[in-house]
Amino acid sequence: MSRRTTAVAAAAFAVVAGSALGGCSSSDTGARLTAEGAYVPQPVMADMASGYLTVQNTGDGDDQLTSVTSDISDDVSMHRTEGGTMRPVTSLRIPAGGELALKRGGNHLMFMKLKHKPTRGEKVSLELHFAHSEPIKLDVPVEATNYNPEK
Image (tube, rainbow, N blue to C red):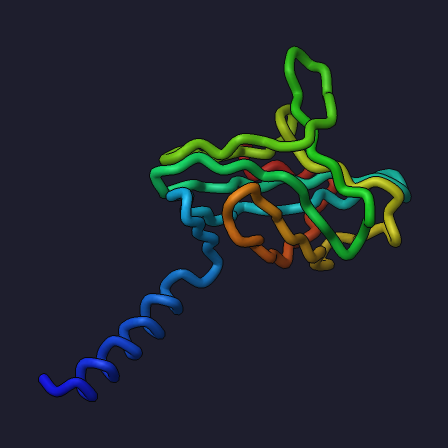
């Protein structure tokens, strides 16, 4: 193979490989993150909502969810639920080869001081920020207030 052919083949491979990683976040620490199953139940209150999703880590290094930003609130916090008590935290661990599940009755997101009350069928923009990986952007559906995908 000539140098030019090799260079063209390498560039084509890079484009294909980059496309395959769409929706993913990688880091130099070995974490490889994807987010799935995200939803926001239509809030009952006008100023507060919750959010749920799962972050998968198929890599060989741990990472941490450190913050979340959204178009519906400038005040998004992460909460850990232990023994029925909800507490805000500054980060949530995503183990190598594991997942971080944010779900009803467990760890979750809270959107405070809503800019507007989202309604069922609307999409909410989220950006997940990590200690080591690139951010993940999501358009998340607003579901019925009583929606629970585990049922």
